[in-house]
Amino acid sequence: MDIGAMTFGTLLTDPYTGARVTQRERLSEVVEGAVLAEQLGFAWYALGEHHFGERDLIPSPQVVLGAIAERTTSIKVGTATTLVANRDPVLVAEDYATLDLLSDGRLQLIAGASFYEAPYEVFGQDPASKPARKRENLELILRLWSEDRVSWEGQFRPPLRDVHLQPRLVQTEPPVWVSGGAKPDSIHLAVDLGLPMVMGTVARSPEVNAPMFALYRELWAQSGRPPQAARTGAASHVFVAETSQQARAQWREYLANYFRDATIPKDATRPEFDFDALIAGQAICGSPAEVVDKIGRMHELWGHDLHLLTIDLGGIPARTVAKAMELVGSEVIPQVAGLGSAARVAADA
Image (cartoon, rainbow, N blue to C red; front, side):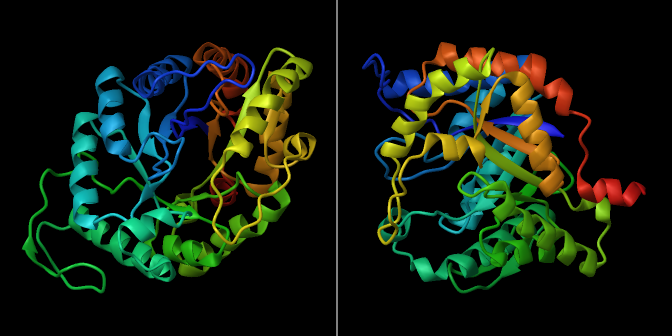
């Protein structure tokens, strides 16, 4: 299994000290986090894309990942996610092909759509069109990256006539994953296009997520595609310290701070914050041994082969995040590296 670090560049006041870094300092922390992640053996460093919120500072992951690409040499530079449903697909294809060049072929793009209303309102898009936009735009991005010249006509943008995209990807196969999993639309999209998938696992218990992983593998098998290509990923909010008591004592108020400030859809009810329920369910908190055990139990349910860890939540100081990352690098990654995906195990049987 590959372990990656994931961040949204969230900027919040430290609930213990009242300290708050500037926007410039926070983006610098994000870049330095990637440098550290590479040194510690993380396979990925992924940035989420958010627009028009009060606390998330990365509306253009490709810009920040370009800075990261120049400071690193081997770690995969990824997105979690790129809002392909909300962005112009031609510009997405151009921007991320440029990033693939700058990183010498290390791009990994997770294609998704915004969960929030604001991008649809500001960009003049109907939220009900999200699944259709996601499919149409992703199909076009794949064509632009795979074909020399593209003529195309669709529903949501002007037609293309004999367009030759520049620059070109370094990688021979488009490095794309599909994001989703709460509803089957995205799972069908991933299988239809023969793409790996990262499930949205941060908001629901592991058991609730398990049927979506199973559906992806079932549909993949029905498609007749090679089973070893059916890769899946997951994501979790995570904190690790030397002991479980330290981890819980340190993280409780930071996680509460993150949830208190979270933006929710207009029609949704804000859930009551229950720290103990979260760490018993979808969140991961504890000693390195506990983190290994929790990831292992999730793997038994999901059979995934990529796990993205969000550690820098709720205004945690960068030095505390770095110490937690060091524990992951030295004591967690070596223990979970041997876990293989369910599809690959089945293919080898």
